[in-house]
Image (spheres, rainbow, N blue to C red):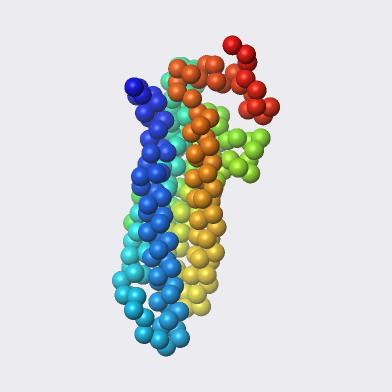
Length: 234
């Protein structure tokens, strides 16, 4: 039976599979329908696609952004706090631990306020605070970043995808206010790139699940050399 520590480690991939990727599929579907309807209307044709798809795309897109950033915070929290406890850092580095907790609180609060902000300045400030918080949390030494293979790193894909979701939320209102469609075009390009990152997340996440051992297996597995792909002989 999986114990609490291993179950906590599985929360991040479980929520990604159960919540994030289904939402991603719905958002992509609504985005394509919205674009088809807009092109048909622009060409003077009568579209069979109902007008509500645009509203649905925005609403579900916000839920997707919440889920992506939320699962990112969860993915950062597990290695940080589990290693704080297992390495007994609470007594050794109390100041850094307190700063990390404050950083989590400020970042999460900023993300909540980002959705509530009505002004461009407010959205910009809260988006920057949330993004900076995620980057700083990702810089903690407890985080495994797969630096030797950064081009296929689940960490870097995830951080970049979260930052793009934050940017998308912050600029949603600008899309409707820009008559020249510059923000809309930027939104399409950025989120097309984000889609590629999500595909990469699925691939690298599945790979990492094969590599991350249960806690009772870790002392032996972590003796392996991931660069040369060798393990000590029993």
